[in-house]
Amino acid sequence: MQDKKKKVVFSGVQPTGSLHLGNYLGAIKNFVGLQDDHDCLYCIVDLHAITVWQNPNDLKSNILDVASVYLAAGIDPKKSVIFVQSTVPHHAELAWILNCITRIGWLNRMTQFKEKAGKNRENVSSGLYTYPNLMAADILLYFSDLVPVGDDQKQHLELTRDIAQKFNNDYSNFGGTDFFPIPDPLILDESSRIMSLRDGTKKMSKSDPSVMSRIEFKDSNDQIIKKISKAKTDPLPIPSNINDLERRPEVNNLLLIFSSLSGSKLNDVLSDYSGKQFSQFKKDLSDLLIANIEPIREELTRLDNDQVFLREILEKGTDEAMKRSNINMKKIRDIVGLN
Ligand code: TYM
Image (cartoon, rainbow, N blue to C red):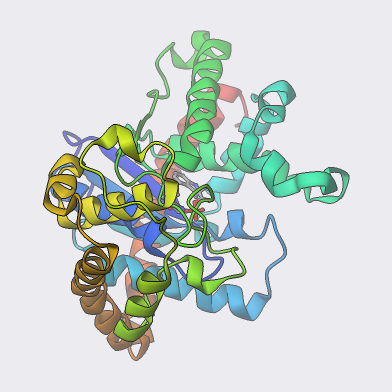
């Protein structure tokens, strides 16, 4: 049940492949931490996934995989609403209305679209172009206050705020100037941008062809040790001063991962390891990763054999999300003049 006194938190993850350490530290770990004091909705955004063609069988199993990772990482269905975006049709309906609010000039500035479309701009789906409007719909549909995401989603969140503001202004005589709350992004400094283990200037990503570039939840302990031992570093020793990390993106990234997993400040990690060999640091980092990932991996294996339970959780989540979005969508339709 919705607790009206708590702030509403909304976030989502695309079911497009194996989730990795970037998704965990940048987003999912923070989802878990917010559950006690906030009213949280965590979505599996399958409609966003199909902005790029997905094999239907893979998509179906990836949806359940994200649900499993949510649960295994500690999202508690008794505290948070876990659901699949396409099972609540109001997301697509509100996205259409927001398509009519968002200016094309705003969408043209989206760097993620430019990166994803690349030189092939004329030939990508129009869904990829209007993707941020669907994301805004996800957030605004529940009158969300806070959105925990990694740094790569910051621009989409700024756009969501602009869309909410324009809707409020355009319909101020019908819904009031603060109909949609203006949502705040929640982006944690240390873990908002986990980089590839092979190239510290590139984001850790599901789409990187090299599995050595990322740690996945399904990695065995041996795979984790191997990926960390082969992670790129440089010939200099570990520095004692944060400023000396500036032109050392790979070393900076490994230290940030350590700091984020251990909950220690980067400065403290540096004072523990400055002047030491990377071999010792990498061993400790692997141990820390294993301590975090092994329990999640074991829970994933257990959930893999309990698909009935997973589907039950998702159905309950859909019911709750539908209940809320139905009420909100009625208000939105009324304000726009649609019923
Ligand atoms: P997606 O599926 O690409 O990523 C899920 C979350 O993981 C974060 N993330 C990272 N954080 C740190 N370092 C990385 N290397 C890294 N890679 C990914 C992302 O920032 C994200 O928080 N558009 C969104 C999904 C979405 C959404 C929403 C999010 C749809 N609707 C509404 C919030 C609210 C996306 O593609 O995330």
